Length: 271
Length: 340
Image (tube, rainbow over all chains, first blue to last red; front, side, top):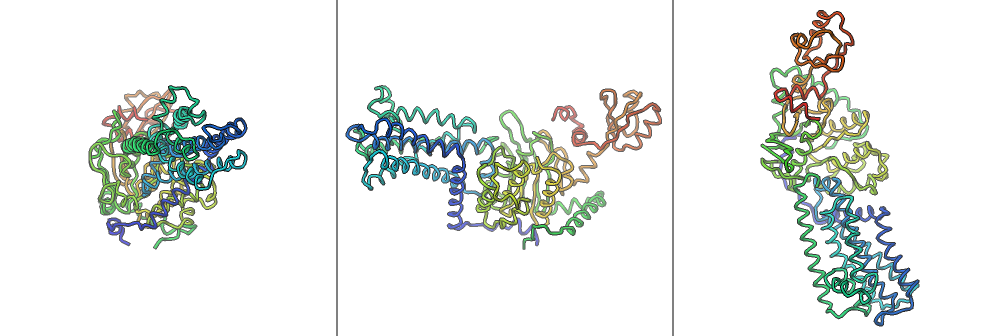
């Protein structure tokens, strides 16, 4: 075999659509397996919202209601938002920051992996874990909290919260591109926990101090939780479209920031 | 077609290889071997490339080519710019000036990446995935990957397929990264310090594997800081130091330039008289003894013994890579001394 001839024969190698689909699927599958086996991720992302829900929604306030909606139902919407945020932020940011900071992403970038497959896998992972959290909250509420939601409303709640995973995945990518591999989890918590509190995910919005209520209006987590609360009949007065618009704008801003990080990485030493 | 990579008897290959080396040394003066190895098509090149990281000049005006079917070794100490050169050729970082080419085009071209494999130094690999899963994923990126059994056999990982990466030893991790580099059956392979952390046996096994790849027509660029490794594998060696290529040639040529002996002894002779002995290139005091560098040891030792009957503690060693760098950078010896 003449190597020289073989080596420079520049025949284009075209990937078939099914081959590309296989790559995306495998990337997502292994991203899921990788995190499923990572107890830090599964325990913190799934158990915290469930624990809070059991404590505050079932044990302490199970019989009360807020604006006509029972607390167990109300808190499914807010802790659902909380859970989706956690699954999405940790699902994207900490993995990306570690891959980036410790050289693994370079190995991937040097390979013929389609770069978009890498990000898609992280978003898919975030959505799967978001779905798990929301479904478990619903199961707990129905079984022990007397939650009675019609099936279409449950589907709408799940669908809305899953769509809400996207802005926070985008935010996670932005954080992952600017946080170090070790500081990423701390950075996420530093954003995630205050955001949750100020948006009324732990303490219902109307019980928050006036100042915090004002701040909440510009937070994406507030708008997602209001969408979810709207479905269970406890939403605020803003039109539904406003919430979606804020979330869309927030997503675009985060993607823009992530893109700056992505481009900056191309020229970095240990990017 | 692909040759089996299992436990086959590759003696003919070894013999052929050895013959070629003998031939290279024999015909060195006629520079015929240089022509032979330089006749292949250029598959990767750095053309007057400079790369800075802020104030640090990692590469300065480097010209470097890798030709089809060759094993080229970039030999140098830590921080010399080896990894930077590899990353430039992989399109992971852009040069500040000059041109990088792979298969005649831009290294970042996805088409080129389907024909290259890379083993880089990684701080952390996802630890909860199994060896077989990592290989399965990377294989899926390539148009014509090798069967996974062959990849596992080539990297010596048959028994570790279901082991999680986090449970592997350092050498096993290194072999897994090698497996990821070759699983796509690439034409061009970049190996950045592939044998770091491997024991002697695993290192030799990896060398054999690299030789098999070359016998199948693959091209390999590897970086190393072991002269022995470059000598054992490479058709051509480029010695790099402080971002500059300071010597380039066949292993025989490099060894001729860098070879030499280090003679250590306790002697009453003065430094001046030592330096006057024919063949001595350098001499320095080292505690109670002196270290004398010479191209050939025997004539110098003869002269030493003739001049100083009280001479004791005589030791002769081959000059190591450190001495080789000193020899190669004699013009700016000060710089070479600082390097380490």
